[in-house]
Amino acid sequence: MLQCIFLLSDSGEVLLEKQLTGHRVDRSICEWFWDQILTQGDSLKLVPVIASPTHYLFQVVREGITFLACSQVEMPPLMAIEFLCRVADVLSNYLDGLNEDLIKDNFIIVYELLDEMIDNGFPLTTEPNILREMIAPPNIVSKVLSVVTGSTSNMSHTLPGAASSCVPWRKSDLKHASNEVYVDLVEEMDAIINRDGNLVKCEIYGEVQVNCHLSGLPDLTLTFANPSVLNDVRFHPCVRLRPWESNQILSFVPPDGQFKLMSYRVKKLKNTPIYVKPQLTSDSGTCRISVLVGIRNDPGKPIDSITVQFQLPPCVSSSDLSSNCGAVNILANKTCLWTIGRIPKDKAPSMSGTLVLETGVERLRMFPTFQVGFRVMGVALSGLKIDKLDLSNLPSRPYKGFRALTRAGEFQEHLWQKENPGIVRRLTLLLPCIVLLLMRMSVSLQLDLF
Image (cartoon, rainbow, N blue to C red; front, side):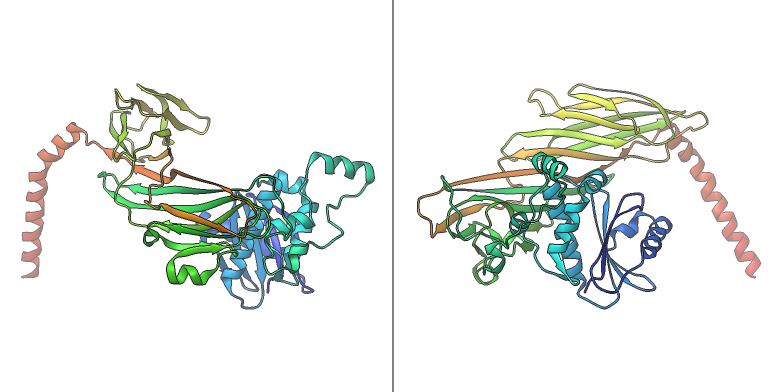
């Protein structure tokens, strides 16, 4: 049972406080939590459950907003974390985004949503379609009416019929002029490539997104051609678990409109669609950098929206970078952004230039990590394919559409450092002296022992 929910800004300010039970939780718990963040660093934000001296704290961070829930009794931690994720998703959907200003401008709607989503510390109504019937999303008309009438509430006076239905995520009397359903496979590739050019990690996080406009109470069955590639699947509440466990088939009665049917992860992939080869030579207060981009594994579809981004080290005072394809920009926070777009067929994109270090700094000690972005339309790089989509309980033949998209997530390429020839030559000359010194120290140690 949750006792209180706080919404904190990225500076630790309490944007919203919602007491859920008769036992009031003091705001000092937020001060203790933020002191721990400042003491232990941002790594604590990755910990979903924290035990304070008086409470168990559950946290979810979205777009710089920390959703913090408190409880003094033991409870399933996943239930608290899942509920906070639902709250974040609903607010983002209602407010068309999620930031400090939107929450402050619409705090009445946020309070009303929390009133409906949780009752006496236990989750109650979390389905967005039902919440939209109960509480109208903010718009210009509602804001004008609130100014004219003085009423600030968007609450409906009638309870939605779906609230007491066995399929609470869908209305029972839906009617559409044209029946259509669209299924999208949206994937993000996370990869880490080390300084030797070896692929350390490559996996895909994917979602099956459905946009449904079907009349009545339809029953859908989605079948994959190769469901064995999927790991860590997570379903919308509308999915029946038994058909998936027995035959790996998605059987469901869909909500109306757009929703996420399932999410999944595909691990231990062997290839990435593009490669990025950064190299750096540093000596005498300057650094020579070159970056080469090309196609490693052709997915069969054009790769576009390619970007390469890296943070200039603090000791760099100025830079002179240019490329043979796209544009290179140095942003205000000393971030270098190379926008390539699509790789041309006649040449490989490359960027090169010089970084000038601050006075007194001879060599670069901190090496940047390169963040790579790209997009591939029309293909899921995980290899997942939709076999068929069957529909029943429909008055007319619907239109079905399928799409796929893969984009880069946390795609990191670490720097390949070229050793300076002069340094290597000097180390080679010093190596015999070092070996001789070690031999003399060993003989001296043996004589002392005797």
